[in-house]
Image 1 (cartoon, rainbow, N blue to C red):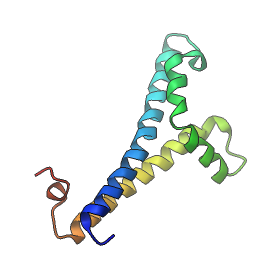
Image 2 (image 1 turned 60 degrees about the horizontal axis):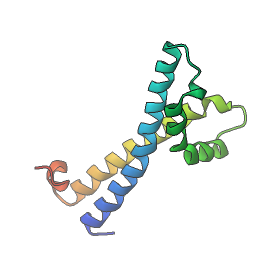
Image 3 (image 1 turned 135 degrees about the vertical axis):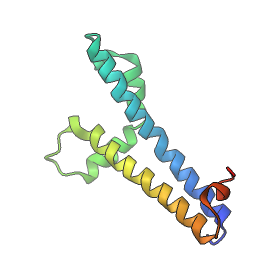
Image 4 (image 1 turned 45 degrees about the vertical axis):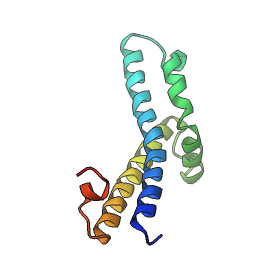
Length: 112
């Protein structure tokens, strides 16, 4: 993938695939706080359950790679951290591809 546009396309695709479950987990946390604030069990909240569906494959993957002593209740936090690191790595790699092409990042992404 020597062409910067192909590399950028692949990296931006990866970034989107990472961002959707990342934002879903953040939204799930917000709904959890709001549900607890109003005295409702989050597990019975419709939006909480909908937001739990999106990162489910990442939860299963995290369960496979984490040790058994990490409780299942902490898996969303583990997935959040792993996805945040992956998102940051993707952003750095996008900047690296732009730098190797000799372009500023804003111009490389078509924002300038």
